[in-house]
Image 1: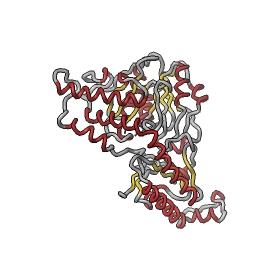
Image 2: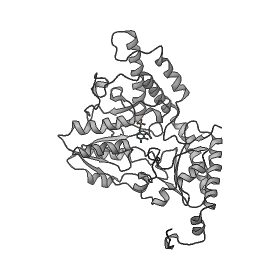
Image 3: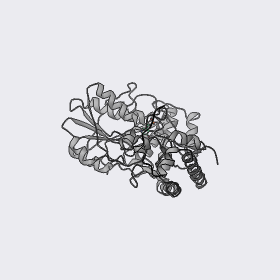
Image 4: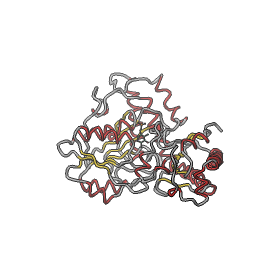
Length: 404
Ligand SMILES: *Cc1c(COP(=O)(O)O)cnc(C)c1O
């Protein structure tokens, strides 16, 4: 076993060796610029990019021409939201997002709000899923875009995406979904699900960092976007800049592999995840699952361990690479905004740990993680006067604390 044991596959994944092998020639022998139209070097690079475009499209039921390569999902989210906002400004100025979107969506709509757009935050239930009837009521004749993530990166809850797509179609509103965490784990079909724009990134599906894509629907309806990066007119004018050929080739391969192994891999991964959760439940009291019990990504386990502070728990089990709160906000000691929005109390939010299992996780590693987590929580609770009082039946809320 290699320590620390990596259980943070929501944050990023290692490049699959098969993906790396496919990429390597594109750094050296096959180095052409995919936009060079005058010689073999360019044509070969272009051919490789087009093959990758088809591989990405294939994984989500899109056609090749609907895939725009970007630097990752942060850029894809920005392009989708800003691109629609600018292009359809005459039609309306209202955008709806979920309150537990990734910061790449939340910060983008906040920037638009400062420019005069109106932003509404959809209501979610206590598992993080959007309430459809409330979403319907929020839509006005000014609404131009609904941006709701496919699956949440902290608690793994999966939204009723096909129903949201249907609702948006009825209302004539574009539907964008940040599908970063769902791609390669859940079957996605942009046609059947009524998705108009969809963001993906390679590094969460065993591809390289710094490359991603935005799916942009071409018909029923055709979606037009104002570009945010101007230049040589690459990617049909929607995203200028010399293409990252090696990265794109790796991304395409990662999508091909994901499509091939998904069904078996998700059975295996959810089995390991469930074993971890069952063992935790069997050995510890006062543990709470965050997110949806079943409508959840197969590799996600977000647990609150009452009376144990998350940061202390991470210190006590340094042999495990996990997250407390979100990886992006763990620099601050604010409880996760996602858990807060789900209505998880501040106390429990501070005790949450996110485990995420992946392609290279082994049974042996899960065994170790089970032992380590249980012993660390027990050790910290043994030192906790609050836990002791709670066990003695003292209602902690009734205790009058004196300040020193
Ligand atoms: C990781 C992540 C992103 C950001 O993707 P990058 O390619 O790292 O910019 C966006 N949305 C979600 C849900 C993510 O998990």
